[in-house]
Image (cartoon, rainbow over the protein chains, first blue to last red):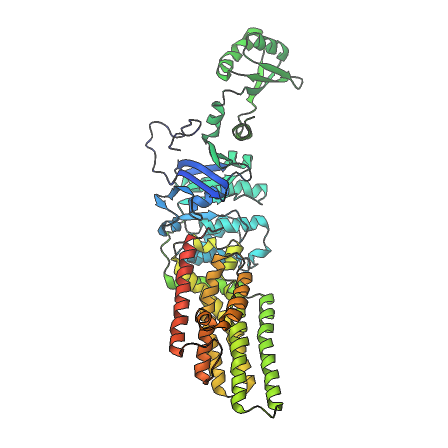
Length: 324
Length: 255
């Protein structure tokens, strides 16, 4: 992320020279009749995985279509590798897209489908490129069944292979893990990381928070067509100062520890849960972190476990989108 | 992935890829059966007319030629050719757009016009055996000489090409090209073009009928121009439709 995000999170280190953005979106808006699907969205991203997160109907797919040039923006612009995808034919050869829709050429088998994709990208050896891409997504290139006979998960992987067959620098993946079983999801996420490590830019949309948290920490959060946050989601959580942090604390003297923490104003609320654990809420996480160890020492109490309960992406997302 | 960089795809390759893919998608059992029935209906009517004329003692050879030309012009060139071509050509890029697979050609380093040319070629390839062949068979069944058969074949071939381009464009403009296309064929090509020379000049049928009329020496309704003019205008309609469709494809909201 190279521009000032709504929540002021900067992903790059200050000393590093930021790479040129691979996707740059400026004041991008799209309205369908009177319905605004995307509103004044601005961001730029470089190599690596960036997750586009938002609830269903938030405008994720429309935003991705705008980035690919598949639809005309009402205002603003989208550039990939410094070029306008809507009008620049050459840049389309450096983009790989997994569209959200299920439509593929059903009568073709997987190899024919991906080979067609390779040919339409002008690949010198389209069959070899297709075979390689299918192996990457763990599909058998020798399977002659038509794609129509495939499961949804297999079809998703065929689409992914077609998106990768031209060795693109920018991959736009719209809900690419839909229909995949947990093992396939994990493998595909590993593949995304490998592609990102090669310097590619992956913009991956999802409404499944667990997926996003495993894909990478860089997120763009979109709700009702607007970009509500972007950056590292853990840093985003840190910025949510108006909301107490919740932590689970396990101690051999939890009652005494709870009383002392409350007395010193380090916590706002304590809820005793299981025999040795409790959930505490604090408004000042830094002060609590500095002081909790010394309070325990003073009581001669042992802290067995202390873990944040709402540093996960779901909490961040709920806060940003629903403000609760 | 090993290093593979995309280059721009040449127009012949682009058109060929679209042609082969669209051709494979167009052939469905439903379409083939329905359009064989449409073509067969024309042949059946032609056979019935021929039987009726043969049994009639009052019809001269000239009258029979005139009846045959009218039948080919109205039912063949005015209905069967455009309807069959609509069913195939309207479903080329129109189907890809509706089933959301157009993106697999759109987001590629390919010019737009070869995509349209490939689609038109596929639509024409599918339409010719059903449309042009059924019109030619009908002309043969009318049994008024070889000139009628060659004239009907030529006029319907040229008509298939012009309608093909027109209906590929229609598939990129409206969501239901078959419904809109049928309305156009029935209302404009079928009815309005018969109401005078101006509507006839603005219809494809006016020119295909002109070719048939001049070749068979018949004065036909809607036939308002010379054969040369008809060929030129139909070529212009074809090229113009391809150009507009290419422009439209470039500006389309691709699902």
